[in-house]
Amino acid sequence: MIVLEEWTFYVTGKSLSDTKLLAKVRDFEVLVDEPAEIGGTDEGPNPVEYLLVALAGCLNVTIRGIAGEKGISVESLELAITGKLNPAKFQGVSEEGRAGFTEVTVSVYLKTDAPKEKIEELLKEVEERCPVTDNLKNKTPIRIVLKE
Image 1 (cartoon, rainbow, N blue to C red):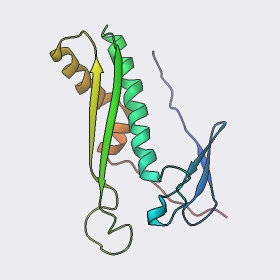
Image 2 (tube, rainbow, N blue to C red):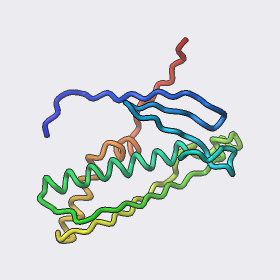
Image 3 (cartoon, one colour):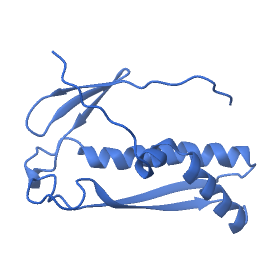
């Protein structure tokens, strides 16, 4: 696949409560909420959970795409992702540390007949080419602009 143009993705969101947001992505509606134990109504994943879902989805596409390029057949693929987050900065309790994940671990369960060396090469290339992995590993400029 050869792509020579830049892609632009667009999401809108409408706040429904202190913890709930209805986001629109193309023709899809996505509900974002917090678990009940931290004040939400538990009607949807929270923002950081969606970030991990985005990573899982992108890794799925990237692993399968690169495997296809390399002639590696994928019998099955499962991903388990854990993100560790200290909420102290987000909650305003501390100015130290990060507000976001301090660590994300991705466990890949890939069933294939390819030798282990080929799988390790595949995963190294996946880590370099996955857009969501790139955004999590590298600084991406974000501008927050007030509109009227």
